[in-house]
Image (cartoon, rainbow, N blue to C red; front, top):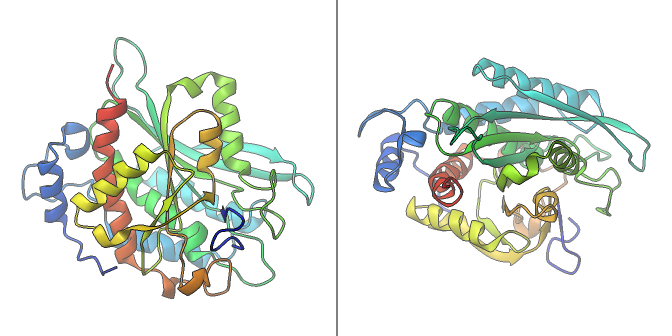
Length: 329
C-alpha cells in the first residue's frame, strides 16, 4: 500500500484485555442472530470466538517463512500455508492463478479464497461480502519479513476463517480472500505496478458475472502494530468506515480508532473502481513517523497479539451491521 503523494507517510492504545465473555455479551447486546452467535447461550464459550493467541501463532509461522515476495518460492510457501490452514478447518480453498505483467517481466502469482455460503433466498445465492488481505511482502534489498505489512492481516483473516466457519449460515456469503501481488515490484508505487491480485480477482468477478452479487469489500492491512490505531482512510466508503469505527467504540476499542485522516492506496481501490463499496481497515502510522514501514524493523517485536485480537473483535462486531445492511431482499 502507499499513501497519496504530499501526505505524511507518502514514501511509504491501550493494551486489550481479551475476554470471551465480554465478546459474547457484546454480541448479545447487539441482538445477533444464529448467523454469528450460533447456538451458544449467554456465558458459554462459542467455538467461533476470535482467539488472539491463534492469530499470533499464524503470524509467527508466516514470519518464520521469511520474505514472501510475489512470484518467488517464499510467496508460494505462504500460499501453501494459507491453503493448509483452511483445509484444516474443513474448508476447500480456491487457488486463482494468473500471470502478471510486471516491470521485471511476467510473474506467476495466485490468490487464494474460500466462500462461507449464506442462505439461498428464493433459489438465488446469497449476496457476497469480501473480507480481504494481502499475503505478499515487498521485495527489498534486505531480509524483509513483513510481520505487520503482509503478515498481520493474513493472520487475522485465518483466525476469522475459524470463527466464521463455526457459525451458522446467515443472509450473506463471506468470501475470505488472500491476495497476492499487492506490493509494487519497483521501489516506488506507480500504477499499474501494484494491486496485481485484487485487480485480477475483480477481473474474474466481472468475467463470471459475479460482480453484481458483491455488496462490499472489507480490507485488512497493517493491523498488527503494537500501538494499533486505525487510520481514517479517505478513499474508503465513508459509511463502511463509520460502521466499523462505531463497532469498535461499542466494543470498548475507542483508543484503537480515529487516527488522522489519510488517503492510502491499497487493494480496496480495485473494488471501488468496480463500483463496490469498500473500506480499508489500516494503521498507517507504524512506529514513530511510520519509520518501521518497509524496513528491517517490521518484525514481531513491534506487533502484538492484543492488536490482532482487537481488530478481530472489531471486524466480528461490525459484521452483523453488514448483514443488516446488505443481507435483506
